[in-house]
Image (cartoon, rainbow, N blue to C red; front, side, top):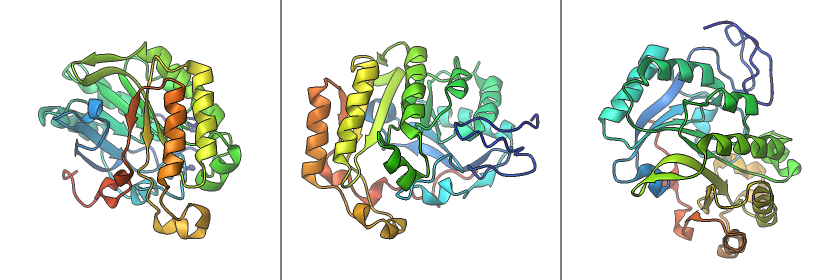
Length: 294
């Protein structure tokens, strides 16, 4: 891999990751926590055969409520690009509906190299599942590689983004990246109940932040409308131990908070997925000690 100063995400650390680490905490060699058939994504992604998820180590965000905390902070095993390519094929052979890259933004060049090795053998869509804090140029570089985009859209407020994810400027970068994803997807395409191409925007409602959620949905609608994307509005927020230092979010959301946000989403015409209150449970936190042997 060519040694360059990393500018893959909007932070633009410009670190030579062959000798040092940027904000994401990763070098140039791919590092993953696990890969597996995942049954708990949106129904059009998981279907009955599951989504073939690859969980990459490290992250360009530092969310204090992260459910994959160990992985986002670097837990995992370094592998070669050849091995990553083999994993893609293995997941396809397991009968997964797609190959899903989870938090792989800081490994985009390596992911593209692995896909180049096996794309002539892949018959399922490629999903890019990310935190939303993306650089438009990096998303553009994935044209022809990604079929389904699954970004988070976490905050409208810079103050909240800075406090909970160490990421002022989150919304402006995320909303621009979603625009490029929509351009590449060209609408929503399904084979029966399974998505083959398109954009699903995820939003996790945080306790005490329903007004920001409403402002975020209004901003998304103002930029892109509601017809060419699906919304996945999540109520599964579960306080993690690190939330003890943030008492205002050290609780689950209330039914009223979620209802107010979901009513606004419906008022704006968004279609997609709405979770039940029972979704706020530890069952949605992946057990990273399990999964396929890397």
